[in-house]
Image (cartoon, rainbow over all chains, first blue to last red; front, side):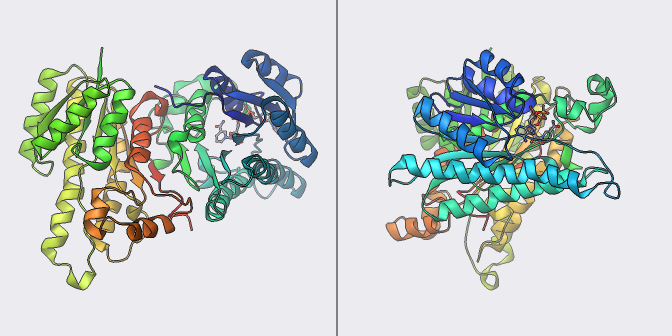
Amino acid sequence: MTFDVKDKVVLVTGAASGIGAATARLAAARGAKVIATDVDGERIQGVAADCQCIGLKHDVTSPEDWDNAIAAAVHHHGRLDALVSNAGIVNYEPIIDLDLARFRTLTQVHVEGSFLGVQKAVAQMRAQARGAPATGSIVLTASVMANCAAPGISAYAVAKAAMANMARAVGVELGRKGDMIRVNALCPGPTRTPLLEGAMPPGAMDDPAHWTDVPLGVPQEPEDMAESILFLISEESSFMTATQMVVDGGWSLT
Amino acid sequence: MTRSAIVTGATSGIGRATALRLVRAGFHIIATGRNPERGAETVRQVEAAGGSGEFHSFDVTSESDWAAFADAVTGRHTSVDALINSAGSFFTKALPDTSLEDFRELWTADVESVVLGTKYGFRMMRDTRSAGSIVNISSLAGLIGLEDCAAYCAAKAAVTHFSRVAALEGAQMNPKVRVNSLNPGVIYTEMITHAYGDNDAVKAFVMDGNALQRVGTAEDIASAATFLACSASRMVTGTAMLVDGGRGAD
Ligand SMILES: NC(=O)c1ccc[n+]([C@@H]2O[C@H](COP(=O)([O-])OP(=O)(O)OC[C@H]3O[C@@H](n4cnc5c(N)ncnc54)[C@H](O)[C@@H]3O)[C@@H](O)[C@H]2O)c1
């Protein structure tokens, strides 16, 4: 059972790894025209080769890189239908030790990166609509940490809360302006990717005991996030905007 | 093996649209409702869409009806993969005019029906050893306030939170059962047109409250219910999925 994304032009950031790579792969497998981008210009080419799609080096904190990425979508496929703003980093550090430079880097990647992406994607979606109401879907990969807490990730939690409420604020604004561009936040719980693995003791991720906190009791895979992202891109979610979609196996329930 | 999905309130609106959408996801449809004629029409539409279906007439607020229905289903089907609790009721009335009887009627129709549905859904899934998904149709009104709808808002808030706790219990089962609430904004179905009328002014009013400038349809909710029912949402449990055109966000 799949939700149709065939022929949609989809730009995915942070696509060299984890959730972004899974999203690019699944979207391509279902017939979407994918532009896969990442700050890691080498690894992104591997994903692009798998997906037979365009792969670009793209630092989401750089306005010029955003212009290039969107220009590539338009150059190769004539338009942009969806943006998945997914690039991310994490920093585990008590607030007392966190220095301003690291705090800024974290908010730059997540918050400024998403801000630039939304602004440039909306401009392109409006331009290609040629006066008709613009259409499109933007998904910001936030986190359950937008609404929860754990020791040591205050900076990340702040950045993710900003992304989740960006989806809400921008979703309302665009709808009220008469556009049919939808903006939603995906809020993943702990997901088996290099980002999480890097923050855990070696081997912990494959230890079933680690996942007992999750009511559904099995690791969440990047593909689980990709499925939800593709639902949010498909026309079947066309009445969803400004929402947060939580995919966490029940992790945030207790 | 064919997967089967139970849809309550499948004789109209969101329930019927969901039954028809689930056909396209490959489910056999077990439709329920109180009106056999309209139930037969749902089954006819299911078959016209290339699916298979059956209709059971019973009252979702009666525990003995649920027990008999559950026996009938588990006697006939080897798996119960999804249950969409869509049957419900609505009225708008200022609080000073709302009698205790009014309140109880809505509470029974909207909350007790879902509590019983989830309880017997768990039993049917347990007895058929199905890793099923239960979707309780709540409302945006269960998350934010709606004028002159205190009884409805209270009932839908109860459905939303009940579903979170049921998700924890479902996760203890073997195989595990997922439970989510689906919270639609204002959807243009008979539930709305019965209360407010069916004309352009009502449509404009309904649309105006949404960020996205269009009317919400039963098909919008059917798509989301189907997402929650199928394996694409394998790790989604205990959430309140909002499909409201951005109405609740501002
Ligand atoms: N893994 C989890 O448990 C989890 C949970 C909630 C949310 N998330 C979020 O999901 C998103 C994807 O994370 P993941 O788990 O797949 O991590 P990942 O580390 O596997 O992938 C993240 C990718 O983003 C890229 N990236 C980092 N900085 C960048 C920049 N400035 N410009 C462009 N690309 C950049 C990295 O090179 C990497 O390829 C992130 O936003 C993350 O915060 C992850």
